[in-house]
Image (tube, rainbow, N blue to C red):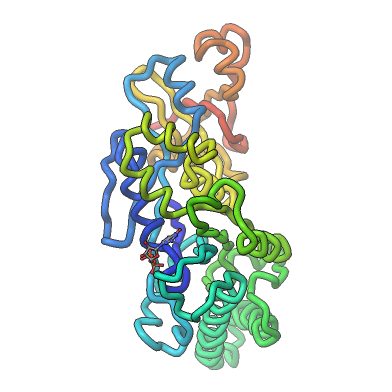
Length: 364
Ligand code: GDP
């Protein structure tokens, strides 16, 4: 599955947000109970109204949303890259995630201490980014030193690694994150394998007070500007509100939301933003037993998409009977789509599209 790491300075609302994410009724509904893999790791449902629609049409007995993993990575402070506090362990945790949700304090509250003594989310973002850049620089230096012997032996792989590490080092020494390096297609895989912290996509989460949840405030506006200039995205959320909502049943939650002038829980937006950030898509499998959503990366071919369900589906892949979501709905289900000529037989080269309803045929 795909993993988002929640980072941020202490006291910005990370734990509040993480608890809301993982304790929410939606996270516990469906067939998977919320599973605590570790105290700071939680899985949540990816909200998708299409899935309910499909289940309704097909009269599916159960609905199984696709899931996303969140990891609460606390303890990132100034000096983390120097191993201060529990710094190194946290940096290792960040290495393992696919994307970073960076929580920024955009609320004023004299009762909640700010580690830097002022509310300035753009400066906070820089503190964290600087730590990540320093950590990358340090690991690059170590790795390049470790490659010296192989380079003398003309090892092609080592040469590629060293070249990529050198280009990252150059931008980092210039005060920029490694994600600004433009990487050729043939280097893309090796680049990703380097797992540099500052190449991970970032989603800024502006944690605002209850009254600013609907429209944000001056702090979140600055973050929005920064995010846009970096090519990153941002969401505005009130962790406090989300925490309250997570304790309500769905009807109460809806009333509460409309009182606050909100259309949907901020967590839904956060999860969807993470999904977009990672260039993820959803396809569906629909039958009388269950309607289920599956996550793939954009551009995934049918056999690899099948492999998300089971390795055997990929190995023995024959073809995918495919109905676009809109056709499935317009034709009133699989039978109707078939009769209308909207069910296509797609082969190994087919690139699955977001919303496809698929049925895989495979050899065992
Ligand atoms: P973490 O250290 O980043 O995990 O921060 P916490 O989630 O533990 O929050 C730190 C403190 O800030 C707690 O007392 C929260 O109740 C409080 N807090 C979190 N979000 C908000 C908010 O939107 N408004 C206010 N006033 N306090 C908040």
